[in-house]
Length: 288
Ligand SMILES: [Zn+2]
Image 1 (cartoon, rainbow, N blue to C red):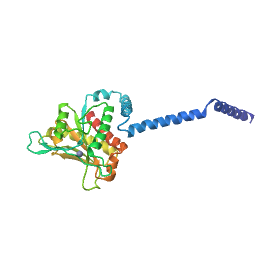
Image 2 (cartoon, protein in one colour):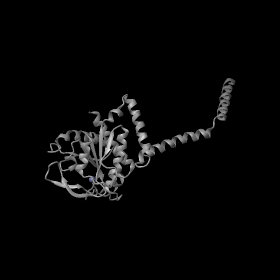
Image 3 (cartoon, rainbow, N blue to C red):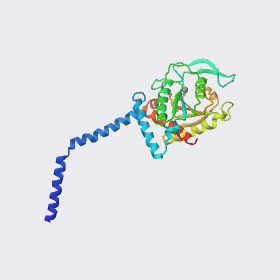
Image 4 (cartoon, helix red, strand yellow):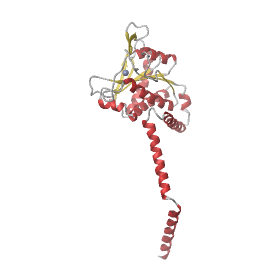
């Protein structure tokens, strides 16, 4: 019994010495300090589209580098050779002047329409489209891709054919057009992916690759739990018919639905949606 009592006394004595030498308050602050730094960092990544662009990019780059290490190869260098053109739909003022819907076509449509407006946010579509496009640009750049944009401001006048020709002339590998939908039926929700028409007179050569990319984006949207109405072929879009580059158009959701309109302006949702597009594009280029 004496032996046990001695051991207990020794343990108690060691405990007293340990408590005496450590500073519990300092270590408490250190721990909570670390935790709150972590949270702040994440908050910058998730919610801030316009400020802190630098930190956003840095964080994504770090993540990317980590990924490369795990995979044991440097995908960033390979990705930098891939040029992605983002086209944020519309602009401050639509241009009702006409342009041919396809090269040499007698049919004409407005050079660029004015887009829709959010029922809840009152935000014009061209503002939402650029907001989301900038998020997408940063995510793609974080993955190491080269990215160009048809517009980085609102006060421009670039027609749909001119946007397509811009990407053609730059030899882009993929065009992603960002839009938002609107309907008289305000209950309709969900994203849609539009691709050029299969066997279309002007788009036959780009259909297959466009659709392949759309399928990968669809897969990533499904994984992220994003409501997707499907992939739809369109032969009537000027921006597709003039494109020599595979192209997908993402209608992010319906600005005519009150809650979906609000959701599309939520930075966390925007980032989730744009990440699924970027991840889909990445999967597509892995097959190349
Ligand atoms: Zn639109």
